Amino acid sequence: MITIDEKLCKGCNICIELCPRQVYEESKTIDSKGVLIPIPKYLEECRKCELCTLLCPDQAISVDEEDES
Ligand code: SF4
Ligand code: SF4
Image 1: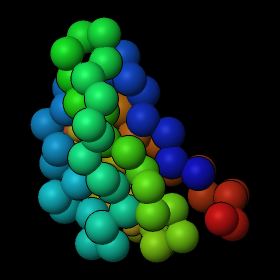
Image 2: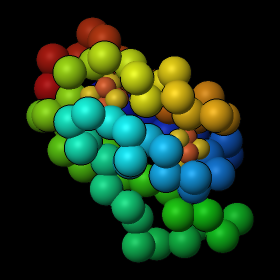
Image 3: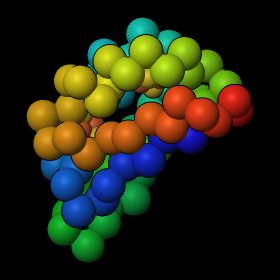
Image 4: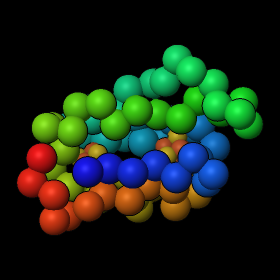
């Protein structure tokens, strides 16, 4: 399970570009702050490396290690 805190995400797309498994997809829906929040779409590809959580400049991502999906 990957959670993106929409209050923190600035829509920089670093997570989309740098995830080695291409888990994230660019959103087509602008939120109330005018930000495109990435969608963690391909969860089955995630290897829980936590690179995205480390690289997100706004600490918006959490990756649940307990989840097997
Ligand atoms: S790296 Fe963080 S701030 Fe940037 S789009 Fe991804 S979740 Fe949002
Ligand atoms: S934990 Fe690793 S594989 Fe999973 S979404 Fe983040 S960068 Fe991609």
